[in-house]
Each structure stands twice: as C-alpha cells, then as structure tokens.
Length: 593
Ligand code: ATP
Ligand code: MG
Image (cartoon, rainbow, N blue to C red; front, side, top):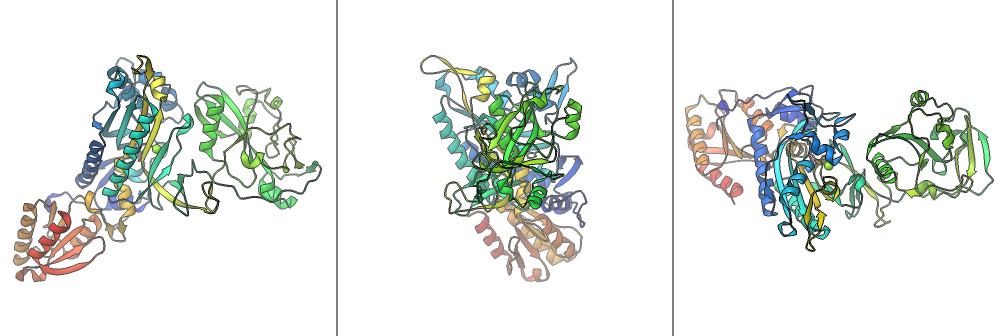
C-alpha cells in the first residue's frame, strides 16, 4: 500500500480530548476518530489491527473446539424479562440501549448475549448426547456506559469476542473452562501482550470460578493485588488478605463519653487518643433490591478498614436472596425525605435500634445488619452510642446483644499478609481488563427454563460458561504497553503493516527507483508492506513512521545509488546499513521464520 493513497492524517499536537497515552497515540497516528461520546470510527489502519487480533482469536477459539456463530444485536425485551435482567439493565444506571419498534414492542441493543444464546440452546440442544457445545462470535456490543472514556478502553460501542459453553454437568464445564483459560493465555501472548490472570468477582451467584486477564499498565482502571511470590493474584474487588493485627484494649468497664462533633474516625481518635483499629465504625447504607424493596443496611467495620463495595453488594444479595440494583450511603437528605429524625449520623453503634425506621415512608422497617470479621473479632472496642455527641468506650459484642454473623466485607490492601502464605505480602498494580472467563453454572438456564434430557431421561438445566475478550480494548491496551515518546511500537503480530519503505527524497531518481524495487520485491514475498511515496520532507516521513509504529522500516536515502538501505527496528531503534537484498532476506527470516 502506498502512503499517498492511505488517507493518512497524523496530528502533531496532543488532542485535548485524550487523557491517556494510548488514546493520544491512536488519535495522532490516524487510527481512530471520535464520532460521539464513547463512539469511534476505526480508520483503515486500525481496522487492519483489529482484524489481525480477530484472526488470532479465531484460530485459538477454533483450536479449542469452539464454533463460530453470529447472533442478532437487536434483542426482544421478553427474553431479558424472562431472565429477570430487563429492569436492572434498562432502568436507573442500567447500561442497555433500548427502544420501541413501530409496533410499540420493546427492544434492547445487545450489551452481552447470555439471554439470546441460552434460549437458542434450549431449543436446539435437547439431549446430553449433543453436549458439550461451545459457541463464539466476534461482534459489536453496545453499552450505555455511565462514564465512557479513554477512547477504545471504555466505549459505548465496541468489539467483543464472546463465547458461551453448554454442559451436562459441572465437571465438564470445568474442563472447558481450563481449555479456554489456556486458549486465552495463548491469545494474549500471541498478540504480544503481557497479561496476568487474576481471581475475579463472580457476582452474587457465588461459588462459581471466574478469572480476569489484565494487561498491566499504569493507566489501567482496575486495581490488582499480587503476592510477592506470584502464587496469588486477584482483582481488588475480590482480593482477600490477612488484616494487620491491632493491639487489644486493656480490659476496662464500658463507659459512655461526651464526644461533641467527633463524627469521623480521625477526629475521634485524635481527640480521645484512640487507635482506629480499636474502634468499630458503623456505616449506614441503602440497598435497592430487584423486587423494589429499599433495604437500610448497617455495616460494622474495624475503624482502620475500608468497605469493599463489590463484596458488600454480593453479601446483601446473598442475605436477601435478591439482585441488588444499587447500594449507596444514606445522606441526611435521604433521612429527611423518609421523615426519620432519630438517627444520629456520626454517632451510630452496631446496635442502633430498628425503631428508628418506624416512621420511614418507603424503606423496609428493619436493618440488615452486617459485620466484617475484623470487627466481630475484637474483644473490646469503642463505638458510637446512638446518641448525638456520644460514644462508648470498652464495649463488647455481649454488651450489644451479640455480634452479627461475620462476613468478609473489607478491602484487601497492598502491604497486607497473604492468606495462602502469611510470610508473603500483597503488592498492587494497575490493570486493563482485556478478558474474562466465567463458570456461570445454571443461573441463566434455570431462569430461562432451558433444559436438556440427561442420561436418566430427566430434564435438567444446562451448566454454562461464558468467555469474553474486549477486542477493541485489547488493541488499545497493546499501545498502552508498547510505545515510546515518539509513538506506537506495535507488536509484530498485530501491527497494521509489517514493514514500511521510506523514500527519503522522492525527487531523487535513484532513491525513487530503488524504493519502488524494494517495495515490489517485499510485496512479492507476501510481506504486508507500506511505501512512503509522499513528496514530504524526510523528517516528516520519519516522524510519521515512528508515530504509526510499523515494526520494520527500510530507509532509502543517499546511498541508494549503490543499492544500500538502512534497516531500522522500531522496537529498539536499532539501525543498520546493508545491501537491499540482504535487508529483504533478513526481514523474511524474522517475519516468516
Ligand atoms: P468493565 O468491568 O471494564 O466494565 P465488564 O466486566 O463489564 O468490563 P465483560 O462483560 O466481562 O466486561 O465483557 C468482556 C470484555 O469486554 C471485558 O473483559 C472488556 O475487555 C471488554 N469490555 C467491556 N466493556 C467495554 C467497553 N465499554 N469498551 C470496551 N471494551 C469493553
Ligand atoms: Mg468482566
């Protein structure tokens, strides 16, 4: 391909809309253009990158025994109503774009395809003899993200590879899950990415295994915790650790203290000379449940710990046996709106009476009481007295009528000791989630009543797995991991072109002739090559070549008359002069070993 025909528009300045390097480089290199918030056009070079990634994914999915298919993007609402997800995905902070057709029927634009594929499987797979089946597709997904950002990293329209497997039993699901795990590792490695697999949250279903694949990069939106010995890695949403020990209080009688205005742990501890780890703090939250109930929640946590929102939502869901649409702190305004005036925010203890909810206009009239293990383990502690400007010191759970059941609700943090080996500690890194594999179990097959006939002739819901890769996010993650201050350094396997021939001075006949010769020789060997034939200054062409990041560059310059070229490797900028025939041989050796 000739650069003069490539519609290449590169930008010298960093576009204001782009915060992270990979987004800036893709815009500057003429790979993508923004069309709207979270909506991007993939320009021809980007499309080549995406197709090369897709090809690698396709090869590995086929090798893993999966079948390619293509499902509709328009989803009738009834399907999502049957699974119980329509409301959660369309109302409030739901991310599904939805619309009405000319007959007034409701439709959603597919953010994910469990509903569609499960109902198809239910119609087509009638017997255990047809199982297992693993189906995948590569397709545009739509999600009305609350905060679309960072270019292709979090788009509202993006390309995903999603796969769904169907099994007669859990053991068979686990076998396919490990095959997909291995396939994923190969895919990321072949794409030139350094990705780690981490334990991931599997939502409220519990039990089922789930792993995310993270490209480590400072710009990543996820926080991951990895043990020193590398044996444990988890998304912070899911991570567990041993909390630092705190010095126990020396036993003393329970006392009530005046603590005017001391509503924060810091304020309280500095005034009273207490340690945060000796205080039980109580958080007041409101959970909105799928059945419409608004459930007030009291969470007790050791004062030096932070609440993990994901663990909280999962626990609320398990304890109420309901999906949780939202879970957020209760504000003084919320209390006022409910007509509640007897909750002394900042001075709450774990035993705050349910009576304070009696006047609530729409909330459930008793608290769901939860406590993290760090709090329930304390023999004696300080806590709020449920009265304005008062706390209790040297309280025990017995004084409060007993401790709630212990739950893991705290955030694990870097520096803490690991559960698998208390001699190792957790380190933190940032990661970009490029893939997610998940043992779904029977959640969807049960909800949609999709069954097969088992060996004993009885109907049973399928066991299911699902497996996603963010194809467009992966492409940008590759840039985040492979660039320098002059531009992108595409890993060879996914680069838009394998080599670029740059004619330094197109007016020079010898240079022009040799450039054309080298270009056509490379084309004949099947190497995907660009020829920079533009009448631009050499400096401009070199800058552009650096920016767009083609792995190999052949520069045809002053020595063209005697057939000499410069071979430059983009990744390490190594440059060598050699006869053009040798340069072509060398390229063939590295690109077609
Ligand atoms: P996230 O936590 O980043 O919102 P998710 O867990 O909701 O992602 P999945 O439903 O697991 O995403 O989707 C599979 C893959 O699709 C993700 O691992 C990610 O790589 C990619 N992906 C998800 N949302 C987006 C998006 N808005 N833009 C680009 N890629 C996305
Ligand atoms: Mg995910």
